[in-house]
Length: 193
Image (cartoon, rainbow, N blue to C red; front, side, top):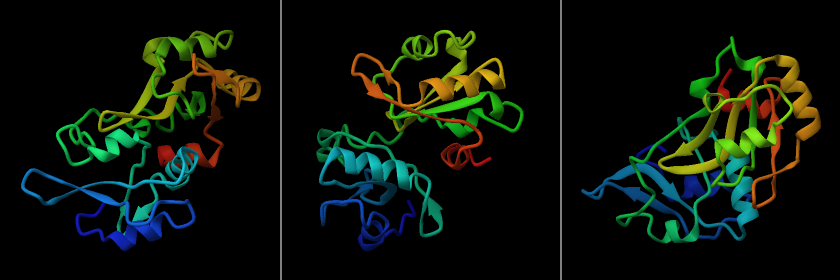
């Protein structure tokens, strides 16, 4: 977020998503200056996930924001030693896709946070050969976002997998996932193509 962001700007940004009033916490560095990170509570986990999905990479002021859902424990320790984990690993899906490979890519949204590459490979069994190197699990400051990008060997395989597996369940937690290809608005928004 912009370093000069105000609480009311964040409240306006999440208007209509059921956030808890006065729950905004702005991240600070060791010297107490704002560091561009923030956290906010929502009435339910579903509302938090909807806000993160719908508002991800939208703008607050002149900067777009990357959103991910964190646990209440992480929220309560946000500016503590284990806080929002500034400096943790960040894996942005947009960094792996370009005009040459976009037609062979699919984004999975709604994956369990503990998803493994092996579970993704099993999910797409029968849809061509997918290797660990074809799978990118999105993270933001050490926190997984629930989104995964998978590259297939052929464009036709992407279409077939999307048609047959969209909203199918994955992982031990049996979470359903949505699949998006390069013709979907969500894919284009994430990848900025």
